[in-house]
Amino acid sequence: DIQMTQSPSSLSASVGDRVTITCRASQGFSNSLAWYQQKPGKAPKLLFYGASRLESGVPSRFSGSGSGTDYTLTISSLQPEDFATYYCQSFYSTPTFGQGTKVEIK
Amino acid sequence: EVQLVESGGGLVQPGGSLRLSCAASGFTINNYWMHWVRQAPGKGLVWVSRIKSDGSVTDYADSVKGRFTISRDNPKNTLYLQMNSLRVEDTAVYYCARGVGGYSVFDYWGQGALVTVSS
Image 1 (spheres, rainbow over the protein chains, first blue to last red):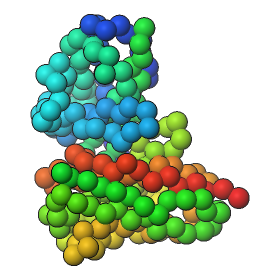
Image 2: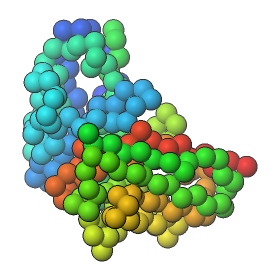
Image 3: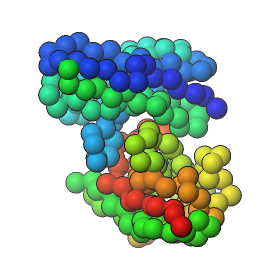
């Protein structure tokens, strides 16, 4: 099975900062990657999949890129509502999540 | 409005059984793969199981294979997860989720059902 490794596991940032989260797969695949946002006590929310296909209603400050084994989620200008935990997920074969990245207020 | 509502969670002793239900509204589940994903307290997301739109194909994580059974009742628009031989490590919030376009990407999630396995 593919293993997904996210980094960092947590980060502190300020409103307006540019934030980048990385997800590395143990083996390469073609854009079979999704990103989710989860706030405490809530279900995850799909941000985009296919590495960069933004879901309806997701702000354009969120973007994704990558291919092969390395993928990134970028928030261009962090907003107060973006403080949450973010997960990558491979859907190449058995669905596999990364361990999550908690974005906290600095 | 698409909604998924889980029920059936609770406290069960190790070795016991529980059945979760997920009632869908706002769409018909017979057009979609459906999934269960769980999250242990303070931990990350773990995919548990999936079932094809017509119920003909099922798949499980190794950690639950042989103990959990996913099923669906399309006329009732409901998804199920039968959990047997429960272990302490199965303690988690269980989410049902809808698959996007045949992919194991989850665009709608329920609010979750807490399953606690403890003596």
